[in-house]
Length: 232
Image 1 (tube, rainbow, N blue to C red):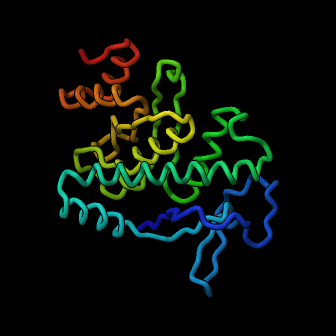
Image 2: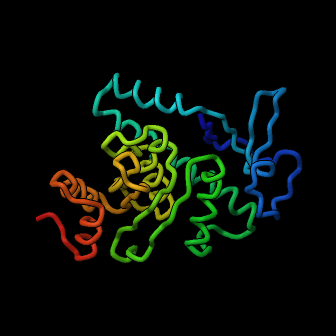
């Protein structure tokens, strides 16, 4: 059984153990996490409190929520992710500017995004790739490898990474200061090799949801969006 490390909150802005903020190659396990057994606390490089969870915890959380509220569990997980993303965007801006001594909004976008996601990779949330080639058209694709949720649930025949979709929505909404929504268009839990998300305005998300209900694949969705297809 594989344990993952999940972020709890923004935590303190003070770096533990006197670590100097100018060191950027700090994502090895021994550098990124500080364990305090006597206090029962795990703190990461950025001062955020963490906890260790098992795959059983993830399964219990998702199945218990689904048992209580049925299909609404997906919307609840998405909303939780949105709140998490918005909160983390604020926390990220504070530690990014402290560490790199530059305004976040004057930084190369791809560097900024990789810097934001690397702690998530260290915490066990998986690797990602962001395709910004379509952002002038009002949407972006995010590929997620080794999703903690999908990896745990296995092939259940439906998208399960609603927490991630909400996280991306909340973070990017705060980053660009414009409301953005997110939908998973392919999932490891549907037999795919990795998960993929679309980030964009709500009208695009609604169109994609409709196409998916009509049986469109992720490749179909990408083609339709890039061809400029909309709902009539």
